Length: 354
Image 1: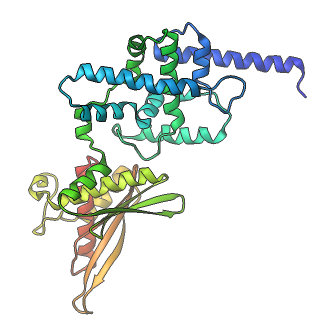
Image 2 (image 1 turned 90 degrees about the vertical axis):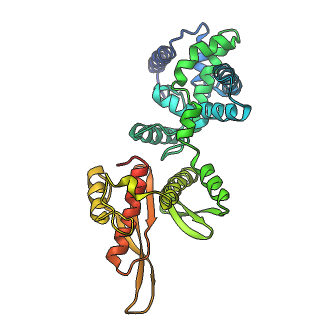
Image 3 (image 1 turned 180 degrees about the vertical axis):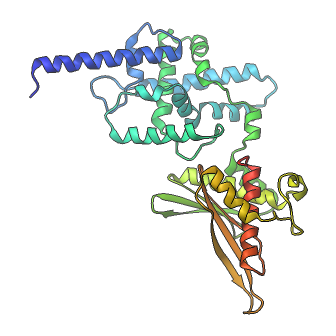
């Protein structure tokens, strides 16, 4: 049993730590709270029973932030129709966007909670975001923990209440945290992969199907179009696997209609419209990017003993997950592997990995 002196010392330490956290958050917000209790509440998870949690603030923050962003977009883009305004608003207040705000401004460090597993989930997301080559609007390799979006909404609400429910004052203070604001141009450059895949195939009268299966601790999403395998990708969460499988499928399907002449200056193209020595080039690329070596397999084998034809697949593991491509049918395994490697290189180039 702790002595009164030890308990007092622990309480002093906790208060000191909380004060330091509050000051750090106020510096990030560039705002000093009149009612400091609001800030404490905004940073407190429901697992802490010593004070009120952020749940009530998060409730009002969701609406206040949504309205503030709506007002901003309405005035900033007078020519946008309601559908596009809704699309841009959603991108700016999504769980993914707000969780990344919490990472960018290090707000995740100051959440008060008593759930050990929460730290691990947040840590995985933070590392994944920090390792990304570009901002992912719709989601990266690791699913955004909702708690991170919740504290951003609760902080917005704390400011809103502290400013006597002045929405304009809250927006002036909070807008800087949301920068860069996602615009329609950004969304046009990064269309939602799953939606784009289904819409593109529907226009061509094709049916898309995405199915899932588990391999150890990964969920693998497999995309088929009109019953034919297109590609697959993996992640720890189903939604992220689906997202990256759709991205990979879009890359492969776009390759079908791409003009090899457009990549003449980058790779030498053979008479079949495929990259010369693609297997060697893919191996070199994986070494340069510090990815595991490509894994080739015979996907299909047809014909008699003296007239066999082969279709090979190649799988590589990149930072976003696993990419899987199937090449064209060839009379030799080596040529079939080169065809699969060529397709993979086209996909990686189109997605700016090389």
